[in-house]
Image (tube, rainbow, N blue to C red; front, side, top):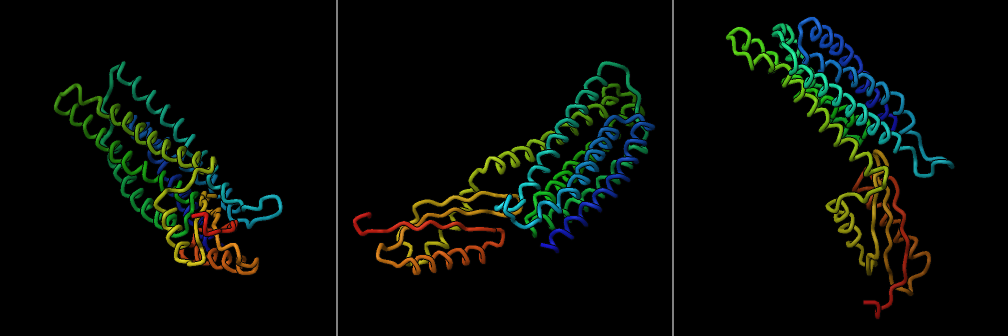
Length: 298
């Protein structure tokens, strides 16, 4: 748990520092170089800074062990953060779309070529940050770090789109092709679409977890296969599992022979629980209810 928290903080701090640098660079060059697309990309990076700071504040809470008031742990704190970041990105997308569309209703000037190089630098930086963050998120099943990785993912395509938009505008001016001058405006709207798409994915996942939606059927089937290896289990009456941030809680009802003693049932439940937790390291708790099985129940 301490290693997980340390890694999460490290990823968040790297994200904060890199995004501050990119935010200042893209907003300044976007404004100075007359590029809406690069400026919008800078606004997105500013949102990333805010998101990373929120993650830093909540990581300590999410990794706290269960207590009397929170018997299932504090894992959903990460999910709440993910949802907040999703809402923030959604608002950013609306702002960028508004600015991009309004740009089509007045004369435009070609942005500076320097804006394109800034966008390309951001693109390369974000690829490195996305891959490293996602790797850590998957290794430690962290929704908070995954949210940071998704932010980087949105910036990857957004930055290359901004660079292409600037390039098209520059070509339009140099070759006197008027409609290409609006390439930067079009790119800013495309950036907004990408931001919106990521925001939607994050919000849907956060809502599913907060509403305690059952985990996907493929994973549930893997749990069932493990349970069915125990000959004492006559029937699985019900199984459900829900994500609780970076870990999973499983509720299981099984039938065993009615003549089994309480101790035999207890020992079996304990063994099944341990087997599931050993095979799936993200399972935090398995609650097992035993039902009596009679041959005529078949």
